[in-house]
Length: 124
Image (cartoon, rainbow, N blue to C red):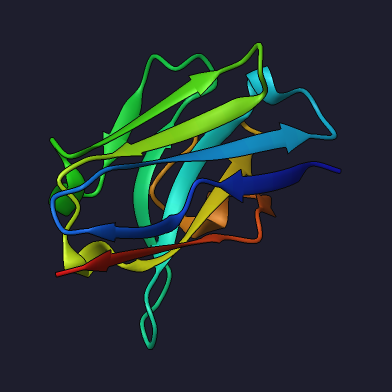
């Protein structure tokens, strides 16, 4: 059973940057697709970014394109989310998720494992 542990969240001013990390254990990370989602208070969990098993395919929520970058290091069993030019509306709990099929995607339904989340707060 895969375990996912996120880190790197915190409080940052608008315009600042944060890098989130998600370390996976329990199964072969290099064959999993990975995704980042976020959930703001009172809102549904929404897709942010995804990367396939090889790192060759990525996809983003329109509102974060050009500001966020998803990447992975299969040797470290880690997926990252580099977040630049942060805005107040990026404030949320950020979750990473794993897809055993290897493709990732924008739908929560394709993921079979989730981390516990890390809080990102952007002050305006």
